[in-house]
Amino acid sequence: MDAAELRAMQAPIKERYKSDPSAAVITLKAKGSIDNEGIACKVETGRALAVAGLHPATGGSGLELCSGDMLLEALVACAGVTLKSVATAVDVPLRSGTVIAEGDLDFRGTLGVDKEAPVGFEEIRLRFELGTDAPQDKLDLLLKLTERYCVVYQTIRNGPKVSVSMKRV
Image 1 (cartoon, rainbow, N blue to C red):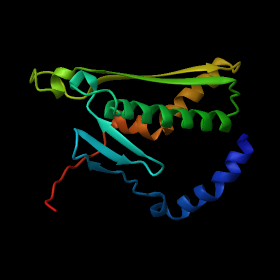
Image 2: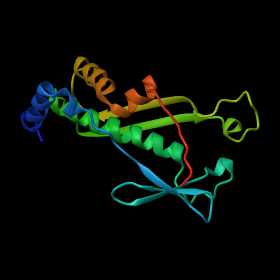
Image 3: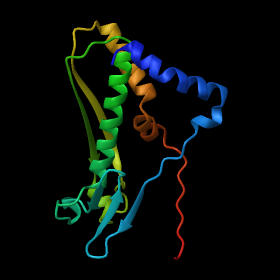
């Protein structure tokens, strides 16, 4: 796909959202069920069933997916798609590309070993390694726009309002 094809594909969508802003607000959903056998949660991905469990650093077997890894994988996926879309739109040719996300966790927090230790990622680093001959100013623009339009990156960076509830069924 080239820049013209991308613009042609997105033009009617953008026009609809301009004329009807409420059409652009969509609720994405995820659903999982608590596993009765082990300490796991089966997440319906729409394409397959992902089974998340404890990370080995908290006593898990390592056979199930770690939700922290899944968060980083979601960041990599979103950033990679966004970067490729932006590269296409601004004519930055890419021969190759790798997206790497790393995050630092102190498992003392989530295990309750140290009440002062944070629960969750203390730092997340996102890195792109690109095979391209594009000039530096184009790469700077590519990074700036990828940061700006990557949904998962912006969500992590800006921390949306989050609510939690529970009900008996």
